[in-house]
Length: 333
Image 1: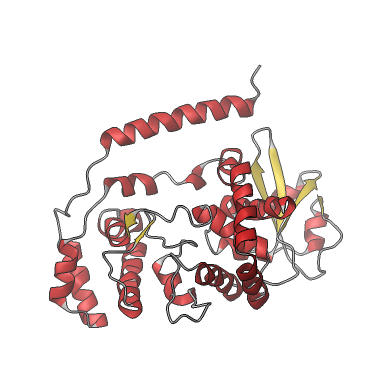
Image 2: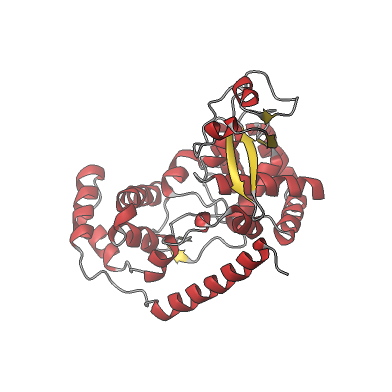
């Protein structure tokens, strides 16, 4: 007799297959934007605010294509899944094995990055494992197409992606890239660590001092940029990330939150019926989150470094996947 988790997994796979079939049937070939009103306004902004050449930008956007598959993909993010379906996507034997191999092949670079930024090496490895399977899947969408499609044909996130499109054009100008040549994810994330344009401009580093910030083909720059990102967002060496905990009574429910920014003292957590491990630094604050294991809830206390991971992707599921993958890779080395 199937348990609840198995039945839901089978149903989920069937539903996912049906969705894929439906999407393929409805997918359109990339094509030009029929209404260029918003694009033309955007061009005017870039000319006025950043001194771009109007004729050059107009010619550039004449080559941009709208992709229905991009809109379909962003409308069904993996983070909408429950934890018991999300976890196996990223924490599995293949990705753990790949992390061990990647670490062995790049041990010297990983050690240098970890020591320079004081960020755990397994976290750096796990990030690129979750994002691109250690650089093997960096994305095949033209980034200019991705950002333009989401900026001008996806109203729910248009403001955000217009901003990222601005950053992308500025980045291409600053770095000497051809904006039509770079490829990435459907959401415009780039390179091995999948930085969005604004993150590239703020946090990408030329770690090997080659004179160029290359997140696509330069492992040192890619891993160095991850280390810099974490350090700049407040990673603290020697502090914990998360602990699975036992809860008692009902008072703990008052502390459950979707916020990943820790705010409760350890005394508050324990008074609410949460059993904490004994090795936590005294003044460290935490939050309690609940995840659906498929067979019932599981509870985790998350600390400041977990919140730092969530700055990469503002999802508890994503941050937990990175953390658990990092621990599995570490155990397997």
